[in-house]
Image (cartoon, rainbow, N blue to C red):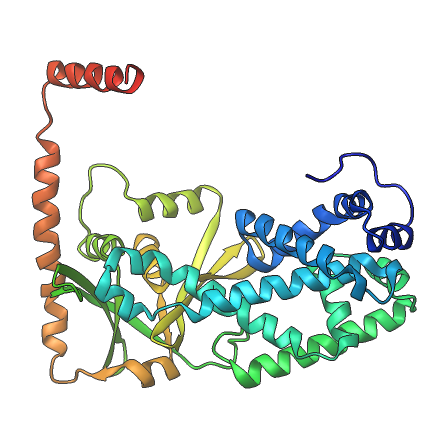
Length: 386
């Protein structure tokens, strides 16, 4: 356990004592910087529990290798470097075990839909961290201090013993190098989407397909079909059952008794005067589709990353237009010129809505008030007397 006394002595003095085996001295260093290290880790992994664990691992590594610290006065920067490496390793390991959305869907459709967003975030994190790691030490250090430790330019200048002008120059050069490398290696992930040719589409249908997983258990797969408004191509995107039902209900204008999830989101946005300008499917990488929602807040328009399934369901609830990037349509779209009439029928949607109507009919057959009262009493007794 870390010592809870206020840190005393300079960093250099505490490092010197720690090198001689004084655990209390290292504890004071850890107490002094563990919060800034936690915030740093949070900005890297974006999950509180994991950030705490990774900081503890970093502190252990720092204690075991404190003899390698060349400049004792720069303990904080050295510790953040260890946190940086530990977090990068964690994100890299998470990325290597990730499965494609199609593979996961074959095993467990609901789990795949939930995990897609996590996979997308980890992949983007890994790409950005790799780009930062490739910078020259001069630019890497100032990037970490400014964006991840959130130090102000005068504070960075003081810590690096350089002028504020030098810090600004290094930051500008670092930004340019990062942008060039991300554009060159992964243009579809970067939020620089103004160059893309976007195609307006309609949500033509939502279909389901029965199948079996690797263990032979039955599973149900859902696919939403997007069709060019002024073309002959259609794009199928496989999604989870929750989003599949929401899209079928929105497409068929199903009269739900109470607001559904995406209808609630739409009403909430309207209540705070936020308008969805459009929804876009902007990229396809490793069998995973990437989407964004363009949101207008007053005089400002922002782009919010989203799973296409969520974005499309929200588009139906708000009546917002949908677009697909030309390169995505070229990769995964298919010619349906001979089947346009079949798409307009929306037979897949009607098939799904039949089951939804049956479920709603059962739900509307409410028990009597006496039955509800008895059930409530039984539930309360089981909760509080167990």
